[in-house]
Length: 407
Ligand code: SF4
Ligand code: SF4
Image (cartoon, rainbow, N blue to C red; front, side, top):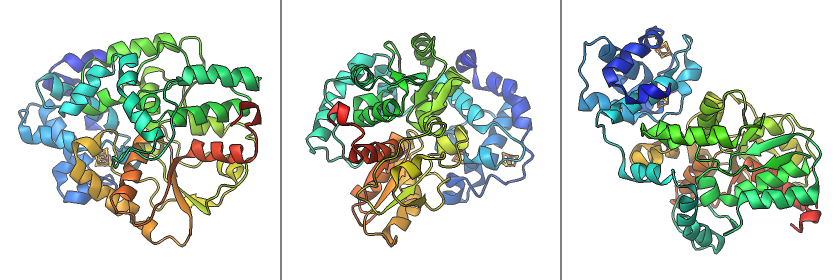
């Protein structure tokens, strides 16, 4: 699939035409599509985008700024894939269409272009993010996307994992963890929680050196240059049968590089006999399933045992399978649309009957998006936003399972 990223759009579309022909124009995908629901514009729907790409592939349409606009307007939530009876591989087509569009000079948001360039320098990217880690740790981070947390400033997740495994001596299966770029650089406390939860449940978790960003931002933005990251990840994770990801978007992207070996943290935890924690100081957890978990990796239910181990009442958030508008990078490239989708999705939190509810999900970008709803007043109460593994981690801390770690 990699070499297609450098060929012209028209040629690419001709190659992808058999997949495009799968579309039977039934329209089952329209109702689930956030951009169609926002605009009522057929061109801004999965069926419309597919029709545009097909017309390009058949030479009935020349590339136009309007066609490019609609290709970039998609959130990339993949809800249309789940709704499609003809199994059109929409996400694959979208990523390839964007790569081809960018290859012939299509615009990329400057912040994404800069991020894409920096992501090749893992250590430098980590150092660049140090001020953000520090600001979050000191409670000084005021940006709407920076949810509260206390990440470690200097010690990497790899070092921490070595310490935890040394102290807890887990005897079960051996897995690798993708530490991620933003997860490691800004939201490291979630990686730490992941390491603790895995190790206390007997998993020998390692964070191999030399790993790189999963490449999700390259897929979303259509940026070139992902191949070198993929090669680094293939090398770093060689020798591991299971590579755990704790962010749904990263998991989906890495599954394209390491198919059959990439495993989302939640589904992996669902295979373990989890230790029991103590209920949280919260009275209800609303679980929202990230799109890339639900529609991409097909983890469509809370894996068994996790909420039971936490011991706090929970339910799915309303329309838990629908996009919150974060869309990987959509809340940066299409902030207005993203906020309108979030407004609709987050409204229920204003009316829930619980005194201390929390919103839990499984992707840091979704957490940023949900926190922005709280920080900007779409949600008119201070609802904490947690990764599900943080909820489990905290319940373990309350149960005293981390005594050996001094945590
Ligand atoms: S990926 Fe989401 S936003 Fe894009 S066409 Fe499909 S349903 Fe619509
Ligand atoms: S649901 Fe599938 S087959 Fe039907 S219009 Fe949408 S993409 Fe085409």
